[in-house]
Image (cartoon, rainbow over all chains, first blue to last red; front, top):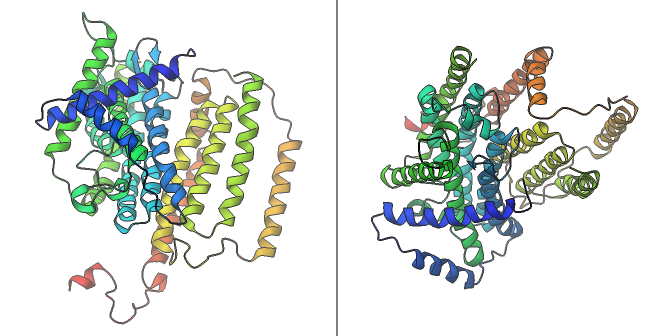
Length: 302
Length: 185
């Protein structure tokens, strides 16, 4: 880690956010227009801030920076090439979960602070969903870390130089992807801010710099979860011929496209149905994934 | 981290942690109290990290977010006034609870000061994680399982008490359906 590392992470975040915005247009059947995206972002910065006159308005103002900080911290744990990563801790995979754990308080604060009924409702819907999804997310990370015998993301990538975890632990992947979509605020799990149901919900009242921060944070979250999906399941930067960073970026773009495509195609289920099945099916399955991960580790990785 | 960097993180973080901790009990809203407690305990995680206790720090930061979110959620389910609109007081039975709190604080401080802490450095790179794992799944397994099951019982019991009618299954006030099944009928 050098003095330039934070700047490098920031550059990855900004470039990644722009790429995700372009992908959103592509997946939506629009002609990608990078200049228009930048112009819209610049116009947001000029807008005046909306400020709710309520006792808890400070939560409303604190939520966008917290959301962005959580997204950036999650992104910083993703290794992009050997030696190129933001934070290299021996507990990096847990740090990723820990960073994402602050998305739900941030969304709740946004909803509660704005004090509007639908916004508060959106915040609580997201809390209910993330309470159910936090466990599968963390347990799956543990199961994938077991074969690597390390929670360090670079070590998890190196453990996949012959067989990607997607092959050895497919159920973990199946559980991880919806959880990742939920924590990245993507539809069909966008219960906090579902524009058709809640009129923007918890995040609907933001304008100006707030809205810009929230929009940036949402896209950085997509980059972070797509990058971590590649790191944990798709062998990270491993691949023939091309340099490692190219493989990593290519796979991340592919996963991000998949997430955004799914986000447009899958209908949004009702919250109680979603939460009920998460508790009844996903959490027991995640326990099964841990057992499976342990078996695979004992049989093939020792 | 160097000693100076550790001190630069530790002392401001400790002050901020205590301040937010005090404000948990000064505010009148459970939503604010829950989030302030999250801030306090999350900052405690940062202190662990500053003291090079990487695993505990990251785990603290992770778990506290989850736990405080659960707390915010439960208090809205259970409380009549989660937003603190009626000027709720966070403290009850003030004199006795203050006495107990001071006593426990003094005891804990005495333990912290009087214990002969080992001065050895923990070796880095995941060794400490492995050791914690063997500790939790070995010698300390019984206490961890006991705590886990106790918390589970407390949660189930809490939900039962919070049901309309409480644990005695009292009938709901007239005109209100008691639960989902009755509403359907």
